[in-house]
Image 1: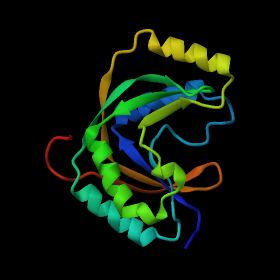
Image 2: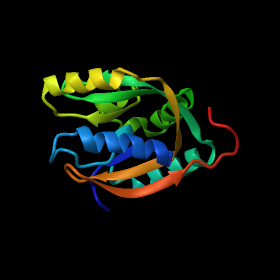
Image 3: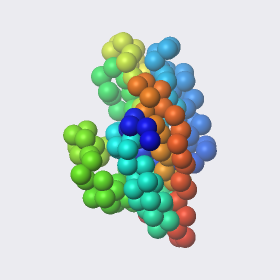
Image 4: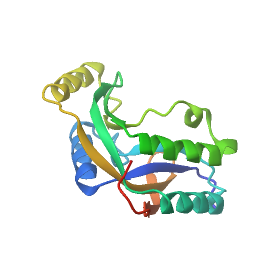
Length: 174
């Protein structure tokens, strides 16, 4: 079994995933964009606990419907820009997973959850400020859907996809 950690992200509906990825491809500094646009739930789950993590995620996805998320607007990262998202349902799911994974959580994964999708990072601060201003001009909040969970293996920079687990509970998203 590989010891490289797992990263857990929320899978987005295809239109939203494409929209954020287009922004990321356009605005990330060349050579720095090694992973697709993503909404990270956990940054480093232990790579040697694949079976337990997999069982926990499969059970969570089986009881979770698709989750509505509001894209609240662009937000400065100092040297980049991200979009803030709000979703009570996603926050509840993450809280449940925090409880399940508590013994393994890093300091970063124990920190308060601030859902976001980064479309620019490691850019010159002036370039980042200009992009933030541009993206804020006509921004109107809109809804996207989390359709499941994605598990990735961290490879020291790039990520390797491991699994995509769809949410499968009936009912409207929360």
